[in-house]
Length: 333
Image (cartoon, rainbow, N blue to C red; front, side, top):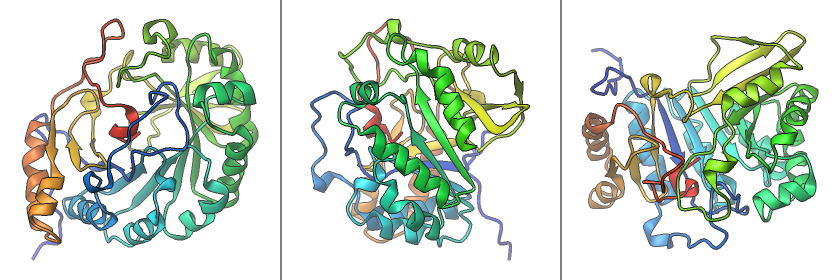
């Protein structure tokens, strides 16, 4: 009898091996590109329990998924989330358990995360200036985040990476400072183009948009970049620098559409399986979970059926109101 796991292959012959699993829509920051200043969060009854989240993860792994990234909101603000992480770290067949965090809780949780099986961690850092950081995050404490990054480095994850969203007129003057910080820490950095998700009135996305090409040109003037074929299984394209182990990555949903390589889906904290970041194609896994409590097979079948509606690509237009009105904290990073 074969032990080969079934594969999730969509209509465009792309295999889904990567799931981004949101464990909470809540966050202790209110980043201007991610949330409105006044947010209404989901009532507890609409949020998947930790047991339901674990069942979803187990279903995906049994269907051939090898990488799960835990996201939020800020995943580490969810009560008892470490028990979920510990259980996921023991899933047979899950070879890559990773986490995206704003860094605020890492002085407490970095070492336990590593102990429970998380091997790579992404930490958001959009500014190295305390006042500017506070302006972008609305509530964040830069010193706490920098201490969290140091804690992650000390915990000896195989990879620690900084994620930075660059907004013109806000932090585009810090591109090199952020690269230099990553070089100094000997960690990677990825620059992410702002996603047009959720109705944001804090700034004009079309005016603040800074493309990957613009950022790469700025970096290249100081540090020649060499394209690599390295990947972490996600959408970033990476460049190396001859005099540093740090890599510079670019995630470019606008300027360099990466949909033809898409190997991932997302599960929101309310149990919607999103087949594409920039479309509303989705399936309600919460309904399946609650109609069949504790049962794995109905969840697996719902996932298999859902892959059939995964679209070929997304379409983002900065000049129009976003068609996707859910905020990034709902989508899951």
